[in-house]
Length: 530
Image (cartoon, rainbow, N blue to C red):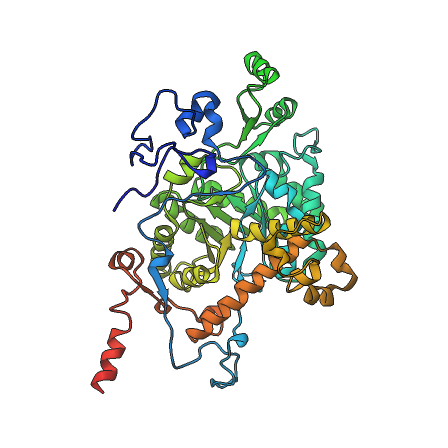
């Protein structure tokens, strides 16, 4: 097998090789010319330094790692059957008139005791303090609410709120940005899904949980250990030195240090154009984790969830074991490489356990816990999913423990597309890819009239980005219904590990899923011998 990734040049870092021939390991052109005018990562790093670590421009893009791992979900195929219909509503007799794909239920639920229902087994990744999340929040959150899925509001939202007010105790007293996010979701919430706010080290120190409980009476909250895109804390960039100093005063790590005279001079001269705000690394112990969960319950939270990243097998085991002990309502594992609004590009490409391998480990550990009589918390998988086939495969491979798939960029893109279509309509600047379907929102969005009928005059307050997310989730729903009907599984709980097969022996070895030449062989042999 050749190199899994070409280093030193990528669209994410806005770099490229001059030569068509590149040394595989280093990514350096085979003929590196003195006088080359660029633009590989080494070239650009020679004058922009640390800036080249990050994808950009910040606030305008999301980035996803493109390392081609040896095994992924394309190494599985979905089984189809010509008989049976499992999971139809009680009392419904299986047959051609009942076992139709529109009758498939895509609803799922999660929770230790107090269940949260979702219309689809998908929910959004953490949309936190990045500009992408802030600028598009109304599209994302209303889209999630009308689609009946959970939305995760990521870490540091209060901490970077320009209008944040702290009390004399140093805790959050007022956060208009957090208030806005919660109120927008609640306005369109219709009983399915929920809004989860994440907490990291800084959020805990600022008293975000206390603020959410006292002002908003929120029932759920999410603790965060990490994510698949990076093994360090969350980052954003700020272009104003006064803002950088304000964030440092709030307790964040800010680089380069805006208080240094040399940095201030470089900013004044225009060499330094932006600053990075970083979160601290967390430190996890079983005792501390369980104590924090009890503290949050004492504050009034009825559900506590956990998001963790693509860490080593030891941390993977810690997450599921501790979550079982602490009665966590949903544990989400996020595999490498992940997608993000801002993570170090080399880290996204070269760090962490890839999603397929990570889910295989988690399933193995869930089996062991269950075998010892321990209750396994409801699980979700994240890390590169974007379509219904991936959702089906993840649910099947993780059955019966995995209840949903967390999507990052897959659910963000429709929000941005819908928003931009609205902008293009106003500017009379629709691209041909859109204008072929019409020139008005009613013509372009296939579900617009459906939503108008449901919401009436309130449709005016539903932004087109939300309509975009609804349209995308409806595509996922119908596609999933078709796949499930083809494998004769008429609700999510009916999907099992036998409903997928491994196309390579290596994928079978890693996942424990039956190899295509072995799957159902015993039954096939019985048929032939009968």
